[in-house]
Structure formats: C-alpha cells, structure tokens
Amino acid sequence: MDTRLMAEDFSAWYGQNQVVKNVTLPVFANQITAIIGPSGCGKSTFIRCLNRMHEVIPGTRTRGRVLLDGENIYANRVDPVEIRRRVGMVFQKPNPFPTMSIFDNVAAGLRLHGLPPGTTAEEVVKRCLKMVGLWNEVKDRLRDSGVSLSGGQQQRLCIARALAVEPEILLMDEPCSALDPVSTMKIEELIKELKERYTIVIVTHSMHQAARVADYTAFFLNGQLIEFGPTSAIFTNPRDQRTEDYITGRFG
Amino acid sequence: MTGERNQRRKFMNNLMFVLALGATIMALIPLGSILLYVASKGLIALNWDFFTQLPKPVGEPGGGLANAIAGTLILVGLASLMGIPLGILTGIYLSEFSRGRLAWLVRFICDVMTGIPSIIVGIVVYGTLVLAMKRFSAIAGGVALAIIMLPLVTRTTEEMLKLVPHSLREASLALGASRWRTTYSIVLRSAMGGIITGSLLAVARIAGETAPLLFTALNSRYWHTGLDQRIASLPVYIYTYATTPYDELHRLAWGAALVLVAMVMVASLAARLAGRKAGGGR
Image 1 (tube, rainbow over the protein chains, first blue to last red):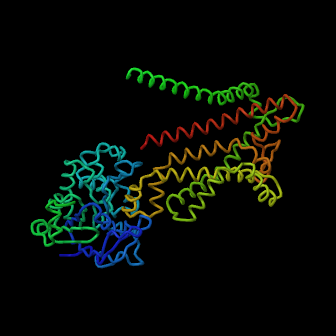
Image 2 (image 1 turned 135 degrees about the vertical axis):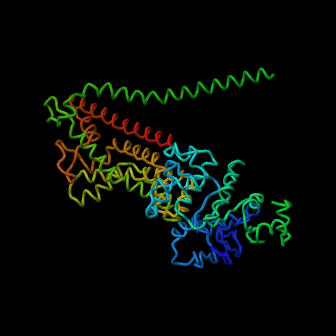
C-alpha cells in the first residue's frame, strides 16, 4: 500500500512545553487514519503539523520530518502555503467566512489558486456541494450568508470549501465534536465516501467514531504514539496495556 | 421582616434610578445648550452668500466664507488621504504581523500621541515642514491633521482586527492562502465596518482642530490656489473673526461654527451607520 504521508521522529512544542514526542507514523493512500487519545495528548497538535498549520501560532516549533510522497515538507525551501494547498484541513468548530455567501465560501479557494482548466466556478461549487450532500439543501439560497446555515451544514460547507481546491490529503481535526448525532452520522458517511478520492486523517475524541470510519487507528498518550495498526486490531487485540485501558474506558 | 427588606430594596432601586437619570440630564444640558446656542446664533448668518461668496474687507457688509468651507474640506481630505491608509496599514501590522518589542513601542507611541495636545503637533509641523518650505501651506495643515488622526485610526484598526476570530485566519491559511492574502480578503473584510467607523470618527475629530492649523495652513481671504499655498479653514476663521470687535464678523463666525458642527455631526452619523450596517451583516 502507498504511503502518502510519513511523520518521522517528529516532535512539536508550544513554547517550552513539548506536546508531540518523537512520533513516527505512516498515512496510507486512500485510507482513513484515525488518531485517538484523551484530551491534551497532542493529537490535534500533531495533525496540525501535517500541513504546517502548527507554526501559525506564535511561539511554536517543531523537530523531525514529515514526508509528503517522499519529500520533506519541513525542508528549508518548501513553501508552507503550497503544502496547505495540497493538504487541506477541516477544523473542530465550523468556520465559514462570515462575510461571504455560501457560494463564495466554496469558491474562496478557487479565487486564490485559479480554476482548473475547462471548468467554471459554478461547476466546481455545485460538484463540491453535491459531494458533501449539501447541494439540495442550499441550491436555492447560494447567495445567503454561510453563517445562516445550521452547525452541521456549516461543517459540510467547510468540507466542500476544503475539497474545492482539490487537495490530495484531507486532515480533519475533530470535525464532529461541535455537532449533533444526526449531523455527525452524515459527516461520517461523507468521510467514508471521500476516501475513494482522498487520503484522510481524522482526529477524534470518540473511539466509537474511529471504530466506525477508520481503516487505521493511532493511539496517542501524553504526546507519544503508543500504538498504531489496523483499526480492528487496535480495538479487538491491542498490544499495549495503555491502549487497552483507554479503549475499555478505564481512563480518558 | 422580609417586607421591610423588600421596601428598602425598592427604595434603593428607585433612588439609584433617579440619580442615574439626573446625572444623564445634567450631562445633556451643556451638550444640548451648545447645539442650541450655536444654532440660534448661526442660523441667521447662513444664506446663499455665506456658501458662495469670499469674505469682504472689514466694514463692507455681506460676503461669505465659501473659501473657508472649501478649505476645511480640502484640509480634511488631505489629512484623510495620508492618515487613513497609513493608520490602517499600521493597525494591520500591529495586529497581524508584529511580534515583540517593535509592536510594543509603536503601540506605546500611538497611545502617547493620542494624548498630545494638538497645538504641539502644529508647532512641530511648523518647525519642520513650514520652515523647510519657507511658507505656510495646505500641505503642512494636512500633515498636522493627519498626524492627529494617525494614532486614532491605527488603534481602532488594530482593535477591530483583533476581534476577528482566529479560526477564520486558520481557515484561510489552510486553504493555501498567504498571510497577506488572508489578511486582505478575510480579516480586513470582516473588520471593515469597524474600521470605517473608526476612520470617520477620526475625521470628525480633526475637522474642528484649530490650533495645529494656526502655524501650518494659516489662513487666506481668497480661494485656495495650490496645495503649497496658505489656505482658509472654518476653525481658523471662527478664531479670527470672534476676536475682532465687529458685529458683522461675529455673525459670520457663528455661521462658520454652525457649519462646522453640522459637518462633524454628519461624519459622526455616517460612522454610526457604517458601524450598524457592518454589525448587522455578521
């Protein structure tokens, strides 16, 4: 199986505080990789390092390599802006642009990078909104503000916005934690459909969600990667005592 | 027991309400009387000539302050042209790009500058620009007013940008937008209403400044002929005419005062409207 992303001996800090410790983790092509672990285990920080979003916060630093198709995205000459175009991200809290309409939110990335040849913005927006299952709900009010939608719709809008620039990999940082169960289910369905075309990494605090959607699961604790493997193996036959304690609900 | 306590509470409640209402009315009396007084004195001076004629020499009746109205608009325009873009860019720098000591220093200087008496700004511009150009000029007046605007616009812009949630910046960066592009299309656009409000309030603030114009733009009895020439303005005309012994000129000074108050009120109202419009859009 192809390895799209590979973190090698990767560490990250906030100021003096090391939150990711020497993590080595592969992400396989067209698979869903879930990262689970209790609050504060460094899973969100780690996923933000995969498209160089961690360094956006003042006072942070990193060490180690992340290989995207074999090339280190932390090499000196690499432009983080280019990496973020190839590795998209969906955040915990839906964050549509409040000054933009639904249409413009999805088209925002296209305006930055230009349209793929032979397409129109209308086509791309329609395709992306269909992909996230939002088209029928919003097709008559594309000019309305993006923030007029419900929380679950906003999150699907944000996923459509991320998909519009055709990233190769999609990172999702607890995308359902602010949503109700029905919206959560819709997004999980969507993630499973998306894996045919994209490679997905999802951080979740819900073990059940990881078990439902992920092909591979990584368990983080105190900034360290404790265990990584096929989801079924992690949940039915964990090798590490701490993984077993966590998934059986003994802590976290 | 509880009835007594209830009564006491109600009494205190009413007492504080009456006190607050009384204080509000007391605060409104001077404000309202200024407006009323200026209006009653100024309205009789306003006629078609006031807005279209140049001032007449002392002793000749009639005439107007058309050149001063135009001059004030030109001075405020010049100041805005310099002060607003510079202030907004500095505010953007402080909020979006700066880290550490330089930002602290800029912020500190801005706060100090907000409190500096405007006559000092006038003297400094006189000592530098006016002496260097060897003449009083509209440019010098505009620069002096721009310096007064600058800290106001800078700090408002910074505050407004800081109100934009960090998650929006992240959303944009994660789409592969550069820092500058994110600032321009996402952050600045979200904060636009507040920045416009702040800028218009700064315009209202400088429209009536007299002291910095006394040694920079000076005054003129004629239409302005070039930005490097001295120029008339309403505040300076009010100052000059009010201190003469002639009733006719006093009358014109009141007219000028009323026009100035009206201009400031229009700017303030526009600021409120801009703020409300942007607020409703969120």
